[in-house]
Figure 1 (cartoon, rainbow, N blue to C red):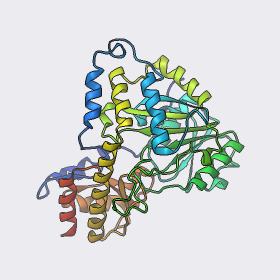
Figure 2 (tube, one colour; figure 1 turned 135 degrees about the vertical axis):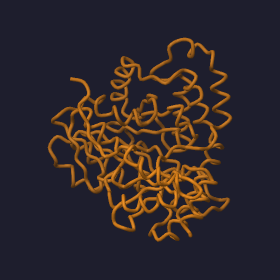
Figure 3 (cartoon, rainbow, N blue to C red; figure 1 turned 90 degrees about the horizontal axis):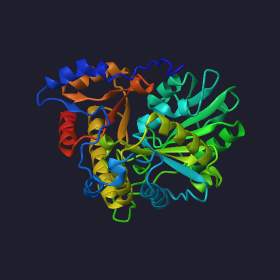
Figure 4 (cartoon, one colour; figure 1 turned 180 degrees about the horizontal axis):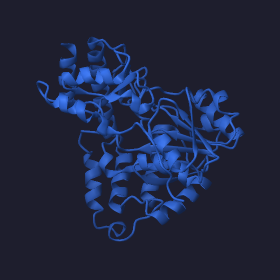
Length: 382
């Protein structure tokens, strides 16, 4: 039957009027809505892209499953940053054309249909729901997917979305909570879909001291103590968009249960969901260039700190998020759109919480330049 219809409040055209107001404000508009990177792509990535521009993987058809070098780089990255040995847990990998594509096609590639249920957090990235709708499956929203009693006995549950660190709230799950989700899902034959795209963006306990490890990642669903030493029934998604500013390169991957990955890879090959060859080389370079990731980590930590302080000065009750790249606040008026209107008058655009399932909240992105964040802070403090 093909893709099913979907419905969602996630429509950026809905903030067009607020942008017009913001552009007319003194000093112009500062856009803190969409989480689109603004910093340079690492030199290592650009050099790798150029070097591979005339490789056989460029003028010939590239490998759907990724080149041997890219697959090795993914395995090295998991070992170096996530404390995960993919081979030991019998996990496989497949590159995706950005993480959004991986999320949106997930339910369809897992062959879910109208009698199947996909669990997700009530407050979450909108594409989880859209992807489930596209497959014709049913969405079950719960307050906290770690509360397994809220979904374990629901008929038809086939998958559970986990997002840690969370977009938009910044919440980070402990290894114990993630292990509970994995165990409960296995009991009922459901797949855990763990969106870990912000895994290296953790701020909980950061002291800014020289002894801090900026790449101390959040718990991974494929870590042995979480998955009990087996990738069975677990799929993890990751993206280089934020760690390496490669959003335009569309570089991401899915790792986990080898039987599920094999089936998905076969379908991806037939529909041409393949990362271009030179981009695969650039992706491998980005995964290996952890020094550049540390530099980007420091940029985001500084911007988040400035933004949190400014939002407090404006009257929002907020703290540094545990993870991810956003400050999530409850609207001062109690309604995101009313706050959006007031913020637009001083030239600032946030994301309305309604996009993520919470119309009483707003999300401010730290993926703006240092100058933009400083200017926003000045306006918020007036």
